[in-house]
Amino acid sequence: QVQLVQSGAEVKKPGASVKVSCKVSGYTLTELSMHWVRQAPGKGLEWMGGFDPEDGETIYAQKFQGRVTMTEDTSTDTAYMELSSLRSEDTAVYYCATEGPPFDYWGQGTLVTVSS
Amino acid sequence: VIWMTQSPSLLSASTGDRVTISCRMSQGISSYLAWYQQKPGKAPELLIYAASTLQSGVPSRFSGSGSGTDFTLTISCLQSEDFATYYCQQYYSFPRTFGQGTKVEIK
Image (cartoon, rainbow over all chains, first blue to last red; front, side, top):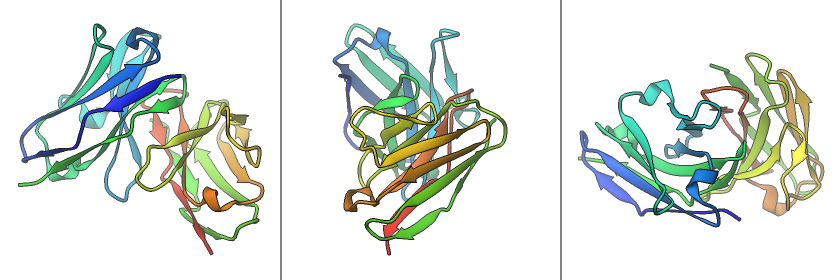
């Protein structure tokens, strides 16, 4: 059974960056394809990017290209999502999720609030 | 990009009702479709994958059907714990995309 535990809530100012972590247990990170999905308040789910095992590369949604970086530390089985140049529209809950496929295990979510 | 049209956006129903939610794709995706349930303040949970396969532990009152461009989620006998928001999602190609969501509320 995979368990994903994310880091705590963050408050950031516009223009800053945020880095959210997702700690894996039950499996090693190398056995999983990790993705990130966000949800603005009262809105739907939005895929940000994730690992494509067919190509061995991380693919990002075009909307976030140049602003998002997804990395992994296999020594600690922790995945990271860093989003830069934050604006108020980035206020959302950010989820990590493993793709079986599809997204079968989810973290609990991390609220990122962008406010001056 | 594969666009998804999910309907209705809001569904009012009573306990015991049979409800259906539709999801239409802008292009064919074979059976690479999943359905999720999300309750307020919680992460989504996988209900169905491969269009019609029930995830382990999901009650049999949930069922999925369809292939190609048109898909349906059916709840045969709505229970109190089923009042939630439901999303479809395609995993046929990148970028992964979700439907807009259907909120099932108590009538």
